[in-house]
Every structure is written in structure tokens, then in C-alpha cells.
Amino acid sequence: MAKDYYELLGVPRDATADQLKKAYRKLAKQWHPDRNPGDKGAAETKFKEISEAYAVLSDKDKRAKYDRFGHDKFHQAYSNEDIFRGANFQDILRDMGIGGDIFSALFGGGRGGRGGRMRFETSGGAMGGDFDFGRFGGGGEAVNGQDYETEVTISFREAISGCERLLNLQTGQGPIHVTVKIPEGVESGKKLRVKGKGGKAGKGGQPGDLYILVHVAEDPVFKREGFDLHVEAQVRYSTLILGGSLPAPTLSVERLIKIHPGSNPSKLIRMKGAGVPKPKGGHGDLFIKLKVYAPDSPTEDQKRVARDMAEEGL
Image (cartoon, rainbow, N blue to C red; front, top):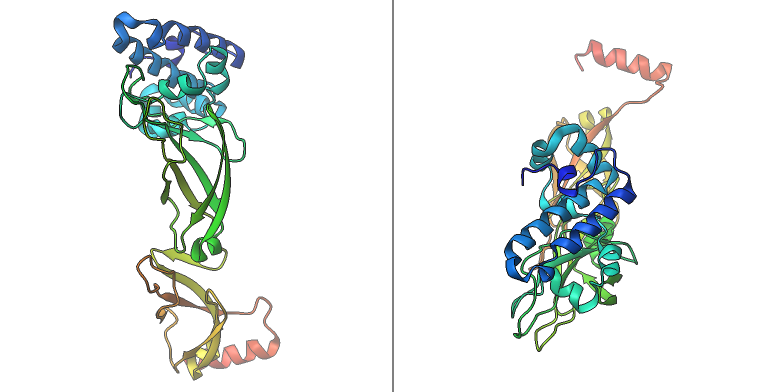
């Protein structure tokens, strides 16, 4: 879509939030497909365009980027999901009398097929985008329920061991409360599906599903690569030369690792099976990178020893 968002809504570039909302409400009524039975295809296209324009211009950050970079560059940087994420259409469309089953049908409850997906924030947050506007419902055939999407953030340790989350969603069909089991070893960006926990069906169709996008918070100690973990362990230079042992963190307890005399600190030490649980059994590995310890404020004796080592070529 190449047309400027401001032109689509018919507002000036300095339009206020109220002006944007008023313009969108007026155009949404005008171009709603059910109000244009003679040319639903063109009306649907126009409805999608004005909804996309409102989703961007009603968001302060997206609008600033749109104004700065222009239409084409903005579209290169933002996916359809990014554009609609966080957009709040619920209040506007409810004021227009589009809610409940009508609202569900409008955004994807097509004839006899799976509806599009609608994204929601958890714990009573505002309804947002990631609309697959899909087909607009109607007809006498069975109508399947809307698929819903939401997101959840869990800690690094919860992702390793698995956990449960109680999700509370506010939808056009009322609240949804569901306890979701998040499997051990889940990776950030994984989508989980809860069958039958989406929108209600109509006319003998099947209920929609709930999709949960999992975000895993970073850990201050461990870094994850697939099912392997990476961690740093401080080692004294004397231990590298003479050999010895030092404690290294694992997911459960600290374990001693052996340092051979003359060890190279750039070489990774592998602890087999101490990584992330795998879905089909077993674990990844833990890789330990040695980090040479140097005192922030060396004593005179330490400086003397360092000078002696330097004279010996160390």
C-alpha cells in the first residue's frame, strides 16, 4: 500500500489523537464490508488500509518513525505484525456496535474455516494487533471460532525447568482464564498452542485456539545457544601455570573443574550433559570459558611477583 497514512484518514500531519480516532471511526463505518454489500471486496481492502493507517498513527513511537523515514522505508522495517501490535480497536468498534460474535466474525471467522488470529495482552491489557483480517464472516455455513494470540515472559530458570502461568485475557467475547504449562527447555520465540481456548464458535463450528509466544529473560550468569549453555569462570594465572581446580557454576550446584598445568585460557572446557533439557530426552552441554583474574589494586608483593614473572618470560 503506497498511499500516505495521513491521506488515507483525511487528517493533517499534526492531527491529535482525538482527531485520528474520530476520522477512523467515521471511515470504519463508511467502509465496513457489511455496509457495502454491493462491493464487499473493495470495501474490505479499504477497511484494511484505514485500519493499518490508524494502527500506526495512533501509536506515538510508530508515528514518529513513520514521519521521520517516510512510508516506503517504514514498511521495509516493520512487518504486518509489528504494525498492528498494541493497536487498540476494541473500544472504537464496540462503540460502532461491532462486538461479541459480530466482532469475532469480522476479524476472521470465515465460512466453515478457521478464523484469523487476534493478539491480546495478558492480565487485562488492551487488545492489540496482529490481525489477520482474513475473510469477513457471513453465510449459513458453520463458523469456527477466532484464534487468539498473546505473549508471556518467563525467567531463564523457569525456561530450563518448565513452569505454569495463569493467563487472563480480555476479548471481544468476554474474559478468558487459562493455566498454561510451559515445557522445560523452551526457547525464547517459541509459540505454544492451547487447543480450543480461543474464540467461541458459531453455527456448529469448532472453537478457536490460543497461541502463546514465549519470551525468555536473559540470565546474568549463563548464555544459551540451542540446548548448550556457556558460562565464564575466573582463574588465577598461577593456576594456569601450575594446575589445580576451581569452582564453576552449573544449573544445579557449583562443580570443581580440573585445570591442567600450562592450560590455555582460550580453550573451552566442556561439561557434558550439564546443559538444557531436550524435548526427547537428554541434555545439552555446558561450556566453560576461563577468564584470567587480575586484582584491581595489586599489592607491592603482587607487583614484585609479576615483575619476576615478566623477567622469566611469563
